[in-house]
Length: 254
Image (cartoon, rainbow, N blue to C red):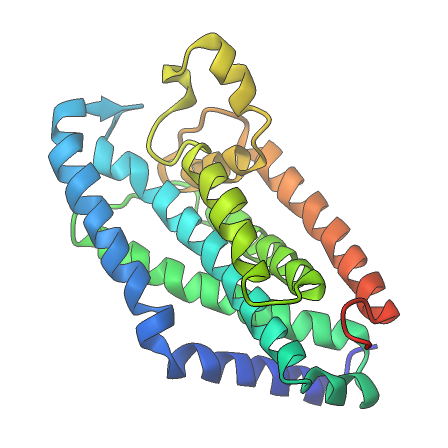
């Protein structure tokens, strides 16, 4: 089912694209996160004090890393695959002896790679501002990998239905960004009023953020295993859904 030569070629193309346009893919997150750490970490954080036993800048670091991974994994696949649709180069893959699983896996692996690389850049930036402890390395790595793959698949799903470049920016701007900000990046949900705390539990990104924070700091507002289960179940669902849509040629055949 997997054409390994084709898979290697797609992933290689995606990696070349990521690093060739590094001023657009790697530099902006580093600059943006530096501003977050300066403004929220030092200026505001110095007045907040400790949160769950950690300095405020340490508390927000895992959330900022996860937010960056989610947004970049999603953006990479949605933009790259839609560009292939727009230029009709995806038609060459569809008529070649390349299975749908190979195409899906190739593009989503590209999104995972970009998410992890940008996440590593943000983690490096964070280390210049504060000490970053890692309490549960393998738990942190597992939730990071699965979350990156989940949102790469979500980006692929978006690209299948997109008809214009504006269509691939709607979800990040109006869905993902608000959910990440409301997912406990800058605060513990224990600080919310009881009614809003209940509402926060319906945000799936809350569980991913807390799962990653548990892996790094050893503290979480919700069970870290819940985040791992949600991300894994959602990843399998989106993988099967994207495969079925791709096999039917959804958004690819005119």
